[in-house]
Length: 412
Length: 67
Image (cartoon, rainbow over the protein chains, first blue to last red):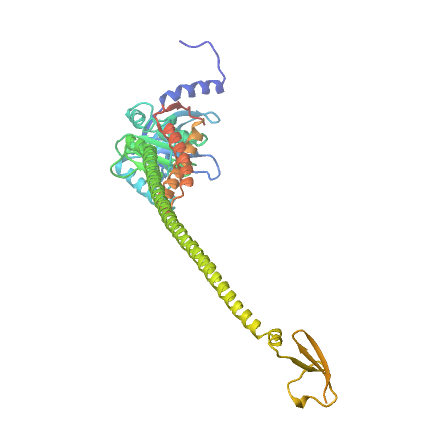
């Protein structure tokens, strides 16, 4: 039924274009008439049906072209993801292209090899670029699909070490995966995480195309923290997994890498505990032994000192008793000497007295007085005793002493 | 204590534990007083490390993509 509303051309084209979006689909055709317009943000080309030559003009933002990761060449067969739109300034119908894919395994393989060589020549896959994973990762950024077994396997296998998992849901295959993955990577680039994990399950080479996208590869290479990929593929490793810092094939393996240092830490702590305490116990035992030894040695030294002291004491006692004996002997000797002395002295005195008596007797007998009494006399001239006639001259005065007096005379 | 701090101290703690173990293994004439100090320090680190390494539930946060 015809609407009563009357629209302007512009409004009408807006309505038509909104409806045309529902005709979004994938279209197979050959590229022709490429107009790149250097310096502008868009480009034009045409896509032609190789069977009957049917052609439609295409408009594409260069950013989408870049994200597509293909190189357009005249005559190349591609699959476009696009929807029709009427260009309002001139009313022409064209395709608004969102994504371009190469057609067939062969073309995909060629594109893959070409990009791989280019990135490899730039050194993006070099071992030297690989960053060391953090020792004890705690904040983990995870990009994968919310639906599917991958996230479940990952969460089931990471240990309960208090991880903070910052999860961003993303398509991991199909046309929208590239943009979704890039958006997820850019989102987590602004989040404080220790390590980024990108995972997906297995699949065909074609289903991995998003992970061979140049922009995604470069985004992973430039990611501020180390990136672990768990993108399993036996043959032709996805380029994102080649550029990541660590690549394993399954989400369980990713979980094991994250758990590794934590599990080892527990081992390190237990080992350290055993070593520290056993070593210290050994040291204490050694020191205790030293102390015991020293105690015994000191005791022995003391015993030796006491023994020496005891022997000295005994020797001293013996010495003292000997001294007592000697003293007694000396005393006896002294006594004896005293007695001998007294005895000798008495004898000496007696003999002296005897001698004195004898001398006394002799003196008495020989004394001048006795001689005088016996009739002898002493003649002196002056004070000199006269012993010879030669000693006197005539006229000298003489004094003749007799027993009872002095006779004075003169020499004639 | 925040987990980030614990993480830092765990890392530092394990390094310190390795140093303490090396000290005990390499010193030919061990100083008992120094050894006792290190045993005390090691015991504290071991206690804290074991505390951090016991089962702690993980946190899961879904972040919406931002352009």
